[in-house]
Image (tube, rainbow over all chains, first blue to last red; front, side):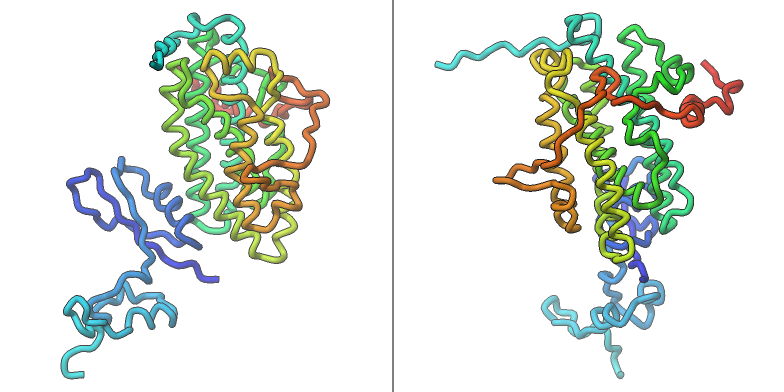
Length: 98
Length: 283
């Protein structure tokens, strides 16, 4: 069974933006939280978050090898689904001219 | 018109505590410290050979947490006239008051998970009863410890869910939980233990052991129910209250040591004391 990847973001102060600090493999969000906190505890973080890598939608999937790496078919479906256009973006997964 | 009662004064020093509260509180703190120290050792034994690298890192960090909690708890006893260093490094195995369910090594990942879910959480339920203690040195130290324990609970609950999903591992987990649950419930003590009610009356401890057992079961009961093992373990929800139908065996129970006979083995005590590098011990 393949464990999903969770990206780890953190900040040291409220004013600081969240920044990517690493990733963990975990079976679910609960374990991802624990693993992130326990793995990246060398700094005194004010806030730490984990995000399933599968939830990150690349603006241009063709140029996002990192985010696309290791996705399964289900995740690909999400990433390549057509945009709703509700935010004015339309279908970001299809390049102009394709 | 409602009369406002003056807030009860805080106890800044152990010497201010009534004698019939000071002695049982000292015993309780020592039992907590010893249990944390041995739990840390048991977690550390599971750092290698964990199911995943992340699980091993977390086990390592939890072992560090437990040793930190033990150190912090032993240090409290200096205010009671004890020498914390002697308590940590000079005692024989038979003097340890650690939770007897930790006398044996944790049996694989089942044992690790059962210990995390039930033994660690029993200790946490006891610490939680001290978070608003009128004895200030204790109150000042407990909250951070409880914050760290939230992660230990998440870890244990998640692994219990995972193991329970694997048909060939379910029985092992259920057996491990069944072994330690009665010991966890018993370790929380008796309401009638000497000094127990006085500690509650004085606001040094929030509530009685029976209340703590209820809070402990309210925490772990939903996890046991979710993994389908609550019934088999006798853990039931009745009108919103979690209880355990299994009777607690108090035969041979020592309220002071919080043990029913037996002893930590000398090899484990030697590790807890740090015998291997004793020559390097510094003041």
